[in-house]
Image (cartoon, helix red, strand yellow):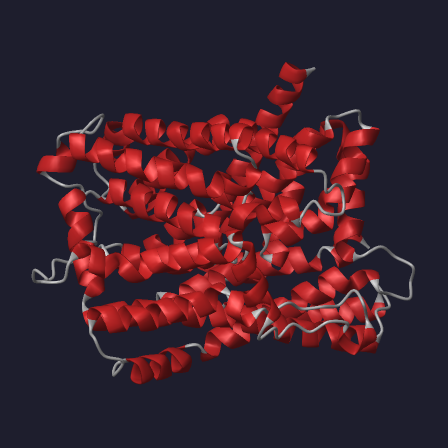
Amino acid sequence: MIFIASAAIILPLILLGGLNLSATRGMTISALVVIITGYFFWQISPTVLTASILQAIHKALPILWILFGALLMLNCLRATGAIDRINQGFQSLSADMRLQTVLVAFLFGGLIEGVSGFGTPAMVTAPLLIALGFSPMAAVILALVADSTPAAFGAVGTPLTVGLSNVTEKASVLNLIGLRITQLDLFVGALMPAVLILILIMWFGPKAHRLKSWLSVLPWALVIGFVYSLLALLSAWLVGYEFVSIIAPLGTLVIAIITIRLHWLLPKSSQLTPWRTNGMSAQTPAPSPMNLMTAWFPYLLVVMLLLASRVVTPIKQVLTRYANLSWSHILGYSQINSDWELLYSPGTILAVAAIIGLLVQARSLKPLLPTAHSVIRSMGNTAIALGVTLIMVQVFTNSGLNQANLPSMPMYIAKFIATYLAGVWVIMAPFLGQLGAFVTGSTTVSTLTFAQIQADIAANASLKPTIILAAQLVGAAAGNMVCVHNIVAVSSIVGLSGQEGAILRKTLLPGLGYALLIGVAGWLLLRLLA
């Protein structure tokens, strides 16, 4: 039965990662197999299967709405010339792609994660990287890998507040788990800037002098990574877990810009002969008369609106109360629900910022309708791929509603793993979190699904539950790198639909490596606190 339960994990890896099928074909096959095996082996009733399919279709709509908002923003910025001006701004700061990777993918993406979540960061940063001269494949992979460390805290701490709600709602315990996350990530997460630069160089750079190219910026990358991790730790300790993913990337971004301006710890090559990757060259548009702040205005507006909507309680209450398109108790099942608070969605905020940006930058809304029309036309294949992926996910997660008295497929897998690996569970805990995020596409949902079993295993094995739950959250955050529907959404923005398997093969290695290092860090932390 373990192989039946694992079909939702094994099939995407084989079909996309092994056979290189497109997400549309590979995930359609996977969804059909999970539905059939769920019906015959888990004895899931046709009504539950139908409710799960309806739930999946509804859940696809908010994600497609975010994708629409991100694409609308990007194309409006192209129409006004703002993207070219942003490009010029980065070029004036540094034309070195190694530094741009850290600034855009890791730090700016981390800030977007801190105020938004929902896979939004990679959708925003990948197009920016392409505008800077990165190839689409490099942009997608770097954006996905970078959206990991900040995702443990997500949008103002949602993975802890909501993800751990089945285990505890005590603020003191949540803050302690948040502190444990930053302790695990103090050295592992600190490596992320260096790892991103290594991926850029080894997979997309020129063949000559790869090691030298990496080592020359390694001191700067390690300092930036350590500053990020230290700010995260101090934020969790002194302020609270809710604002870690805002304070850490914002503070580190300021420090990174200062170090680049002062050319501190950087090689002369990054200033005199900017490093470029093989086959990629910086786009050098004609000088734009647009003010740099005006060019950045829509992105700054997105950050401000997202932050206000998540932090200012009256605004949040209004946005979540009106235009609420959520669907509860689908076909009468209290466990099968789908949330879509339209005004609160990052997609709405992105669309509003794009419209206001047009008024500020072009003083006209004339490009809006043709741009929106072209965006909608481009999303057809993505909608299908996303829909079938979520159908598989929802049947998998709702499989506890069965007539065979079996636990849900995710819980069956977790209990099976725990039976044989409880002795080394501190190493395995982040992998279970990553597994949950790989299938569900959410740090929060992965934690909501597996937090209780993680806590139970910790109690039975006499392990500190706060460390095990922290490892669950960091592992789930690393799952963002390999989550299929994240890959589908981001690849569609940059024109790589159909190459999801190639992307998955690239992101799988850093994802598994991250989880392993967190497991080792957890083992060491347990020894230190014993």
